[in-house]
Amino acid sequence: MRSAFTLIELLIVVAIIAILALIAVPNFLEAQTRARVSRVKTDLRTLAVAEEAYRVDWNSYTHYNPGSDCPWLSGRWAGFAELTTPVAYVTSIPRDPFGISRYGTSAGSLHHAVYEMGCGAAGIGPAGRQWDQGPGMPSDVFMLESDGPDHDDDTNGNLSTGNFPWATTIQPNNPGTVAEALAMIYDPTNGTVSSGEIFKMGGQKPGGAVFDVVWAGGQ
Image (cartoon, rainbow, N blue to C red; front, side, top):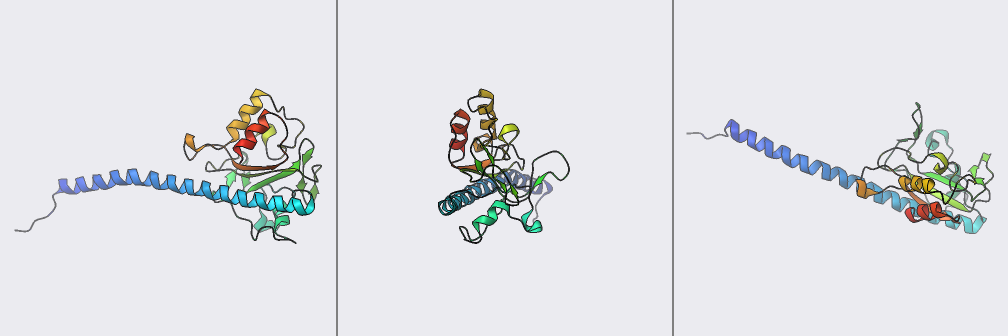
């Protein structure tokens, strides 16, 4: 007599496979996110070393590169171009492994898969792009940033990369500003897909509690 699985047995096998998938898939996605976070931190450290080498030669950090620029379409790397030519402080500019993210609610408000790099003179102003000079040159501080796994630019107000940390309008010891800075820092203990930016600070740290918080979070 031939033997075969009964319908009940097949349903039990399918249920077991489904349970195993429910356990395995989230763990796999978590591992992917952790790997991307690690890669971002490595990339930012590499770019920070390049910025420091650039400053040794030129007595200034580069101009800035907003993630809203689309360099492989426009051909303009902004500040990143200065790290590759005419002297190659890095051989290539890495792309953000988290890909495209949002920096606003309007259509087209996107950061492309490019790290943001803010440079400027602390307390004076941002460095601007090479073709749009800002008041912050020569620049003495920089901020390298990824929008992180939530794909959203969590900086806002005075802590936006357009004027932080070189703006004169920041109240460095204001508790509300400090709280805003803390909220800006990515913390995987809240879940790997959490709000906040992954960033690296360098250069001259201005005085004040908010800068203490940001420099500690961006190392």
